[in-house]
Image 1 (cartoon, rainbow, N blue to C red):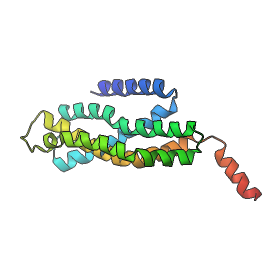
Image 2 (cartoon, helix red, strand yellow):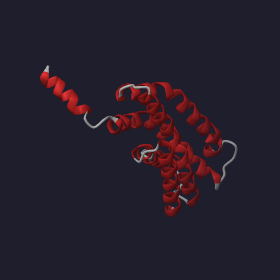
Image 3 (cartoon, rainbow, N blue to C red):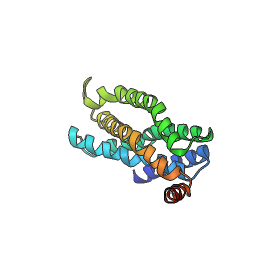
Image 4 (cartoon, rainbow, N blue to C red):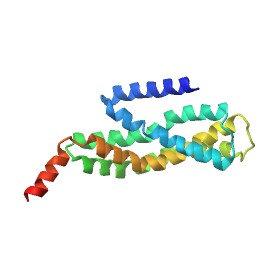
Length: 173
């Protein structure tokens, strides 16, 4: 399972590197994968599902699903930067404009898997843990992504000399 997971994350990185033409932006997007694992861990503790092979299948699938929100945020930030916005305005504007699409996309996935994850329509020993790991992981990852990815974007996408320019202006004035 570890080899399968690493292969999946590696392929995600390669696809994102080709799409964004960057080595750093795919890494910023992959920050959401550990955030999703936090949600899976919380979900397993709350629901009492064991960490089984089927839960791990859900975790592998979740790695591909969880990055979608970060892709949307970083692409919107890049679009605003291409229009000439400073990095702070680009990040905040992208986060404000994309919060509803990110929430709707994640909520529809969670809503679609919710009955299977909770066993409302009947318990499934095979698919219940898969759905539960995706629901909990995606729910927590989406909430954290809306805060963490803009901060990571601001820290890593700003020009290297931007901080020095502000310090020189403060000391000169």
